[in-house]
Length: 366
Image 1 (spheres, helix red, strand yellow):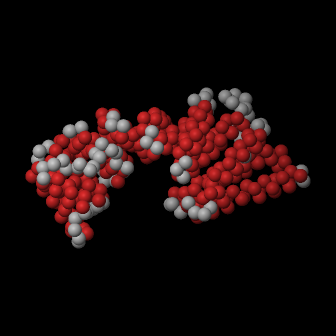
Image 2 (cartoon, one colour):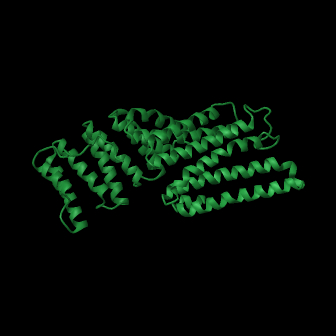
Image 3 (cartoon, helix red, strand yellow):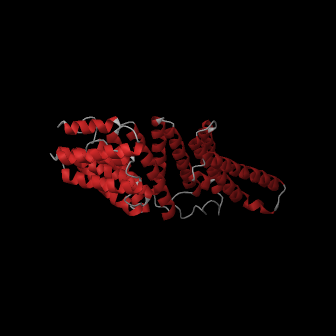
């Protein structure tokens, strides 16, 4: 199921997770029957039940994620599965109270195993619920569930507990902070999105390393919020750090690296740093041509941006040549007339007016 999910085959993944959820139920029924008949593993039945209930819990959550991602006729079942999983937590906690089960005896621990285990499981359920609401555009519900997850996970990660479980709780909190920040950004609550995104990046870089894909994603999202808030100095610093990490991890020609280079160029252009903007444009153009091809819309847009920067610097002849290259690339690729947007750019350049009157270089690239 996990492999199918990562391949994007969500319907098949949901089927496998659903199969997995039926097995614990059958085994629990067998255990109950064995207990009634006083069979040999009666003394271990609470631990056995705990193991099976946890397997059922995670199978339900995974199935819910897969059904929601598939978006088919069964996607409406996803939230119900999350709630069913949450309803198992108290029973799992009861099993964990038995000595030697679910993490060992409560002696010497910061909290009884049942309490900490329930907190971890409920945090996971709240996160999955938040993601489902988020993908459906129900942002207020999503944000409430993200905050619930953060509250529970933060209480675990900050407590005097075992290092491994604390680290896991911190990463769950980081994912919830990231989701909360994205939801607030989607609703254009830009100022409110900065703190959760910054916290997510801090937690992820601390526990995973700043070069981890999740850490880089949180850092880029932080830069995008700062960019749209027009906090250009801070946004530029975040983008430049992001680009360095992306280039090391993914390569300069990866679409994520190119997108960040594009935003570096936009900020420099907005701030009137012509030479730095040209350098960033060239970086994005070279990488884009190598990985996407010269006629790709992203590459053509970056070439047009370079023409805009040249024009703003008073280098109109160079700007005209750059934009003619855009026209040539577009015509060669399509075999038809040049798209209106590039004709408009060229006309404005040749007419001595602002090249990107319709553009919004201060806005971050998605």
